Image (cartoon, rainbow over all chains, first blue to last red; front, side, top):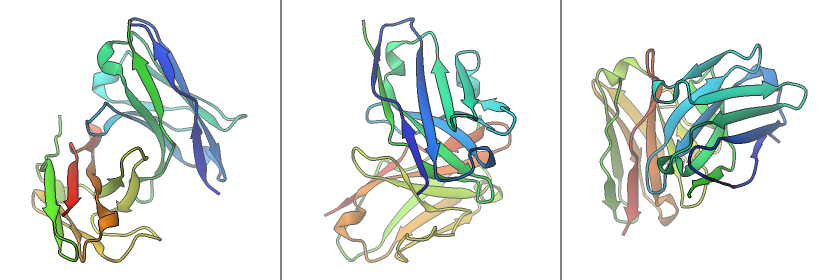
Length: 119
Length: 107
């Protein structure tokens, strides 16, 4: 069945970078955008950006421009999100999700990856 | 940048109707969708394109979008509906925007 499986939890020091993977199963990888979002403890969802696996084109939220890089490996059916210059307020659960463009919504989500930034 | 506003919390008695609002400038001109998120779980899409339910979502979930406000309605609310509900819209410049989420408590 359709699944998005993310990499495991990470603990990083301030100033470091983190790279989270999102491996997809059960559908044509290049047929759907992959979205990246995060949720700080007790907070709402925050959209970070998206990548079109067909060609690699990206869109980023203005807040994360210059600090986040989205990539993909079509041979592995996997998308990646790298966030640099980590700060304590980057501590959050990071999600990938599939965008179904015909309905302008995110219909399948990964299980989330906890990233903790602490000295 | 575009913003969506939700009430922090809504309380409802079992069997009653819960209405959760989401406000944004000319929201009716943008498709709104809604996600349900239970503690420790990933969000689940419950409404897309203002009022459509994905397969598998119970009929007690309905929604509308008019003017500046989108509304998610849960009819005959059950204990299993206790969760956070997030609205989301697509804005041409800000791309995807989320509200801050509403915690629904079934008392």
